[in-house]
Image (cartoon, rainbow, N blue to C red; front, top):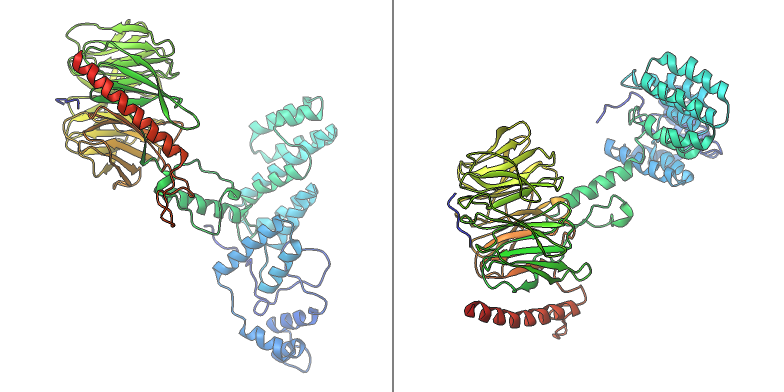
Length: 639
């Protein structure tokens, strides 16, 4: 353990009309109406009767009610009187289902659904508009816009819709080789709209295209046909109120949002979000098991013979580096299939021990720093295992932290004795900042700003180019270490006696304080991890590893196994189910999902024991590692 002293409104034209109350029903016809009300020939008289009754047009010699009842018959008339009016939510659901079925080509089913429910899928003017767009009848589609204008909330949207229509018309003329007609559209129809003149200039350039393939490539357009017109219709629908025409694929959108919300709320979801609905079941809620989460010891690495102060996965996730009080750095290889770690190289000669490690952006180099009284810094070539640079500006320095510039050609280093340097790969001093007692460092993605926590319980941003600095984070207790998310927005701080804090660096506000961890005045390194960095993990002085979901202050897992303080936790950036922790007990533990599959349980229903092959491998590895541990202990005691 390393000590440290520091909804839009509805249109008047209702989308869903109850036949018994509104009396709107179309005459019988053989063609599909995309959900508009249809009546069969046998029901035509009934429809007319109901329409007349609801509009006050009574047949001679009879009342409206009796006309309707006599036409429908006593049983049908009674059932219509008892028919319950659909709620607004029911109407919306029916329209959503109708739209989805229509997209599947089940037009007859849609017509029957709309007829029985008394709903209509969309406004008749919208149906005409859709058909004319898909058939490429641009003049009729443009005429339809005048009818739709009265149904829209924003009259200015008509200009945008007309522009999109004419643009498609123009491109199709060009593809067909009708240059004069295209030129007429450009000059006499598009230009007078006085809308998006920059786009008109681009469109005019397409007149120079030599052939249709060249046109499609330059315009990034699929060409004349159903595909491009469907995409055009999707854009046009965004300008129409949903009461007139539903947004495209609205049911699929809602279902996808529901699935994503469930995944987002799942405490243990740790895989890539697949937006394809075919990859999930819509019949059950989304639930991830804790057994799929890295909560189980997969390996115990015992090659170090003293306290392990730091561990860090490489950026490509194929290696792990661990630094120890025993003066060595061990580089481990991660097997891409079994996710088991194997010792690759041992880097020796760090006289004061290794308390911090930093991989270069391309993982070609590894920098090692020591504890407070260490004035040296080691830069290793990872592939060859050779020491490229051993840097020391002064014996009075304390180089305890380091961070790589994103360009991979420079790094910054410093310590609590007031050193703050920027150097090249050969250790040459490029810049320095005097009087900054550095505890921890991080380079932001802009390649200019360096974040440094200091002995004043704060994190400041330093710009080596214009030599400016500013305060970003201010805590009430010493900041022992910190790390920054990949996007540079969030910072995770281990604060003395307080635990783990999450800060928003852009808004400069404290977002969350995570509970459970025991943090004194020893340096403990936490990390972001999991898919999309949705999780946070930290070591603790109570010998545990704590894991939180980023949005929850309470831990979702407490991992036991270490017997002394856990100094550092590192989450594999490529394999979200793999994590490592370094402890004063001299070991590095590798954590992963439960080693048993659904068909391999420790104790089955029959009382028999079933041990999977992976578990057997782990047991064999642990046994061999125990043997090596005794050999290393003897080596340390006799050296």
